Length: 238
Image (cartoon, rainbow, N blue to C red; front, side):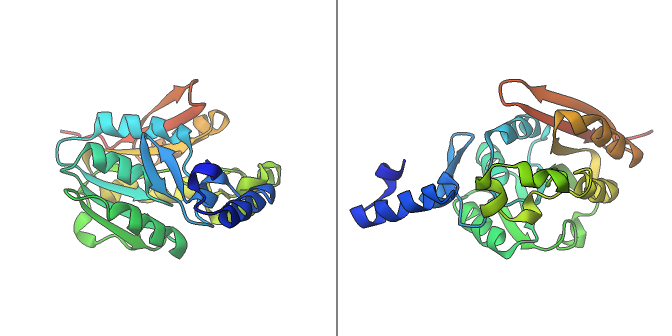
C-alpha cells in the first residue's frame, strides 16, 4: 500500500518512517476501505474497522424507504457514507465532537450527490435540529466502548495515534452508550431503531442500558467480523 501510494522515493521514505513509528497505515496513506468504499482518514481521526460492517448490514435491513438517519460519534463518517451510498434517498446527519473528525467527515460526505447530508459538530444530540425530534428512523452509534483501564493494552496504532475520546468509554466502557440511550426515545420515530456497536462481554449490560430507556432490544453477532451489535426498537403501542 505504501508503494502504491507514494508519488516519489522521498515520500515513500517518509511513509515508511511513519509506519515504523507506529502510525496506522490508513492515516499514512489517507484512506481506509469500508464496505467496499474508499473512505478518507486524516491523521488523528479514528480509523473505521471492518467489524463495524455488521452494524451497517443491520441498519440497511431495518431502514425504511427514504429514511432519516443520524450517526453519532461519526469519526470519518464511514458508516454514513456506506449507508447513504446504498440508500440514496436518505436524509442524513453525522455528528462528532472532534473538529478533526468533522472536517474529515465533511469531505467524505461531500462525495454524495443524491443524499441530503449534513455534518454537525457537537456533543451527541446537542447539534441536531429540533425538527428531528421524533423523526429519526435509524440512529447509529459506534461510540467509544473501551474501558479506561484497558486503553493501555491496545495496539500502539490506536492508543497513540487515534483520539482518546474516540476510544475511552469510561470505567466499564459504556458511559457514552448510557448517554446515547438516555436521549434516544426523544429523537427516534415510532418503530425507529438505535444500533450500537459493543463487545461480546459488554453485550448484556448494553442490552440492559437500552431496555432501561424503553427500547425493545436484541443482539446480533458475527464470528467472521468478530463483531457484536445491540439493536433497540422504539415500539409503537396502540
